[in-house]
Image 1 (cartoon, rainbow, N blue to C red):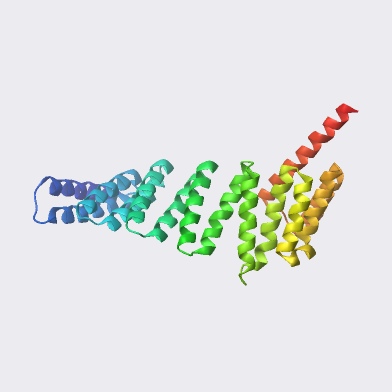
Image 2 (cartoon, rainbow, N blue to C red):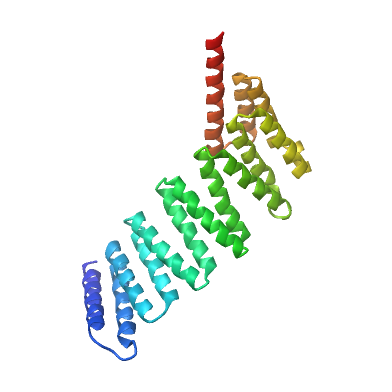
Length: 289
């Protein structure tokens, strides 16, 4: 480990020396780039992640002097992957620089990929607002490049986080849009009932029973097979329990569905919010009587 660190320091010093000297036709930048690359690799082997990241950023400048934006972008990505070990903030900063270069040279697929990576870093930091922003950007670029399945994955993340932040209308629109597009795809149509269930649960969170009833009618028109599904019956039964302000019935409906189709953490969290609203309404009614 110590040997690698010493080698890295040596390569970096040689690179800096090259840059301060003079060379013909940009050769000093090529030589320095090669040395910085070797230095960064040795820092990585020594697990000196911050130094490796900083060295890759120096490498970026060499590539820019050589007019190679693609190589510069890749060096920023390499820097980001080092910084990921120590600082999400630094990693995000480097990935944003990389995306700017990839957009400049028309590599939109690469830009989308790294927007998604930025979003995942924000997700790991529990910064859902920023995660939404970058999953949105990634989805847009993936869609423009016709990478539909990955675009949909990103959109679902946006919908998931938006609902967690109580932006239910945004979630509903996304889940309904994905459901509509999935109907025309033989491989994706089996997921439609799941997307409509998610949209329906977001409707339940809003607490407007008329809107829920209208949504269920719309979903059955959109997908005639939906009316025969457990998901459709569940949403209708929960809506009825809310309309009747019957907490016991609500709990039984949720338990029964969960025993057949286990609810994930996201659905459980949202349904608990619905139950809390029902409880609050019951207490309010008790106070009035």
